[in-house]
Structures are given as structure tokens and as C-alpha cells.
Length: 469
Image: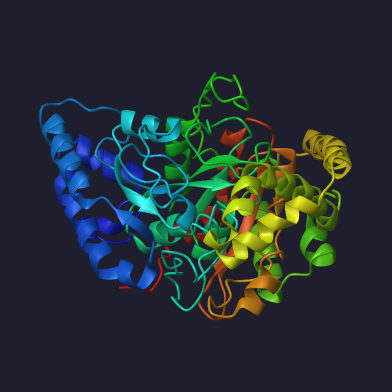
């Protein structure tokens, strides 16, 4: 539940705002004006937006208010604002990928995920900062500055869904869309202290989203609470026959069981990820142990689980991601390399040096890794592990960013496609979010939300906000 009164409109959650609008206790116009005022005050410090579409958003809010007054609600998100990562098409706005390459690339139609949000009544506020093409950042040599962390604007907010994480955390909008190829929803969720879900591969259509890696890309919801994340997933999930990676599965009704107890659930703790493979900062280790103990106190059984090492997962992810990214970017990198930022150019060029044999062997090893995670999930209901091994470092220290960025446990579940959720596990001594990750069985996001909500409710992390005014 929210700490403040209804007058603190910027901290209203998705479900809370939708309920107030449906019951005519809140005007969509009032909410939108409050958020636009907050964007005007804070975004010059945060750079969450590449393009704020404020006038169109306000007009949409007026239309939503008229519909609500007449008792016509479009869906469960009626009148609720949303931000869209700028690799995702929004009709009438450029999809730039935060890059000079595409700065004039006007989208003519909405991506499927945006279309579904609008169909449920959500109002698009604009396009959000990202690492260049979801891989190169945080960078200062692009047409727009990088987003910053609202817990401390001298620190980076994670990426590549950086504007999404920053803006949700700072109360600029209650929900956002991100994409996740090697952790790009969960990294900003971890750095900014919000809830970010990488759904099961194929659960959410990627049609209308600029690709980075065809077999690793996922679209996911980013919110401040677990229940809001489940509600958003219910809207955007679903089979799309025109997306070759889309899965034909029924909607999971993800929000229905969020408040179920975790009692008797089996949680597999992958300690070796942060204790042996990539030793975490002591504050992170302590926070993860606290999450495990809290779930035990709530009635869950916690046992150790072993998987392939983070080094093995990372190698497979790197070969597949960079090979597939080179297939997309190779022509531009040959023709106009100077139009890329330095970081994206360097990371994308690496894909030119992998052979077809490297790619095939990585895909073969990937199948073995999927089998090993599947075997672990036959004995437990959910996996618990680290997300980031460190709090967010300073944004102006490239050496620290280069050192800490690979120190994470997110890429394994892009390789395997299992659903994975990152959220706050506490705060560091410096007041920066620490994080935890929960991983579930294919298409069992409902249990994932159940466990995440169990931790959220017991710890109160959903009531923590950054100190930004």
C-alpha cells in the first residue's frame, strides 16, 4: 500500500490509479497534469525521456476522462500513463534506439505490446532513454544524454531500459515497457529499486520492437510493485501469429494469485552464483540471505541448487547475442560506423569475429543448459539468486561501469528463456538499491509473482522511494 495521501499522485500505483479512475475518485486529466509537472521538474536531472509527447498524452487523458464519466472504461488500465522504451514503436513518434542512425525513423503503427496497452486504456506519455540499440551505454556521445539514477543522479540507472527504470522509480509514470536480451529489464529494476520482469520467452510479442538478438530478446513490464507488474503482464501477454518466436499459450491470469501465501513452496537458492562464480559485495550477499530467511519465516522451504557457472552461461549468451546482433547491424557498421556511439560500435563489432561454428556450438550448449535448469525446477517451485553483484556505480566512471556491468546473474535466463523477476532486496549503506532475482518455470509467472509478493509484503520494499523531491 502507498504511504502518502491521494494528493501524492506521482506515487499512485497502476492498480490504485485505475481503481480511483474507475470509481470517479480521480480524473485522468488531474493525474496526467500532475505527472507532466513532475516530469518538468525532475527530468532535466534524470533524462528519462528522449521525447515527451505531453500534448498528445493530455488529449488522451481528456478523452479517457470523458469515457470514464460516461461509464465506458476501455479496460483495466483506463487512464493510466505509461512510458515506452525507445526501441518499441509508437505510431507517429520516432523509434530511434537512442541512436543517430535512426533519429528520423518515424513509426507508422504501434508495436503489438503498445497496441495492447492502449486497448486496455493506458495512455502513452512518450519515448524513453535506452542504451544505444539496447547495447551501448551509458554513453555521452549520442544525440541524447543517458538516463540517471533517481536514488543518486551521479550513478547510472542500469540498462538498457534505463529511462524506463529511472522514470518508474522517480514517479514520472507508474509503469513502463522495457526489453531484456541479457538482463536489460532486470538491470534497471535492480539499480533503481523497482520490479522488472523478463517473461517466459515468447509470452509477449516482439513485433514492432527493434531487435538486438532474435533468440534472446524479451519484452517485459516495469512497475513499482509486484501486483502492478502482474496486472501489466496480463495486458501485454498473448500469442501473436506474426511473431515467429511467439508462444501459443493461454493467458495465465497472473494477478489472481499474487496474495497467496508462500507457505510450503520450495525455493532453490543458487548461492554459488554470488559466492563462488562472481563473488558479490558483502552487502548484496547479506541482503540475499535476508530474503531467503524471510521466505523461510513465511513458511517456504529453502534449499541449495547448483547450475552451470555464470562464466559458462555468459559465454553462451555472448556468442549468440553478438552473432545475431552483427547479422542486424553489420550493413550499417560497414557503411556508417561513425554514426554509432563508441560503446555500441565496439560491442557490436565483436560479432563479426564469431564463426558459424561458434554460433552452432553455443546453441548446442544452450540446449544442455535449458535441460539443467528444467531439472532443477522439477525439484523446486522457484529459484532465488542474485541479480546484480553490486549497487549501481557512478555514471561518470567508465572503468567502474566496465568492471561492474558483467557482475550479474541475469544472462542465464535469457539463454534458457525462463521467466525471471528482479526487485529490491534492501538499501546499501550509501542509500542505493540492492537486488534479488526470482526465476520460475516456463509460463508459470503466477508462482513467480506469488513468491516476489511474499518477499515484498514481508519486507515493505514497495514502500521505499528514492529521496528525489
